Image (tube, rainbow, N blue to C red; front, side, top):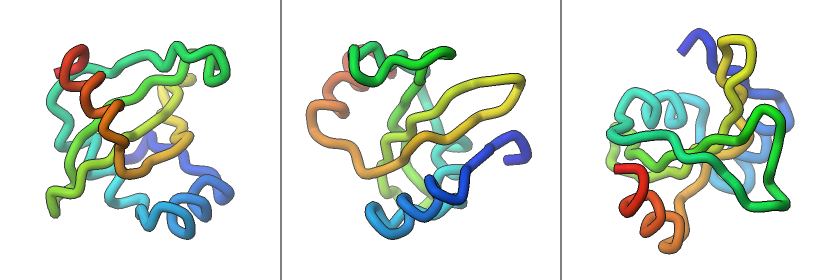
Amino acid sequence: MKNLIVSADVLSKLQSKHGVSKREVEQCFENKCGMYLVDDREDHQTDPPSLWFIAPTNQERELKIIFILKDGNVHLKSAYPPEPEAVAIYNANGR
């Protein structure tokens, strides 16, 4: 994914804390079935708004992907296995 921007700090956190690789994030974008949802929680609001979705990797590992769209690029904020509450929200509003 040419327009995916992942900072060194985010990549380090993904790998050490969540065991997620950049390639898995790319696979989730490729396998996405549904819409992006806006993260409207007060303590997570950004400008431009943070968007998120849940999708599987090619190995069927579901991940929650959080990112910002800016200047035609996707700036990754985080990616990790979703909590049940996030899955329920995405199933109800994003799929």
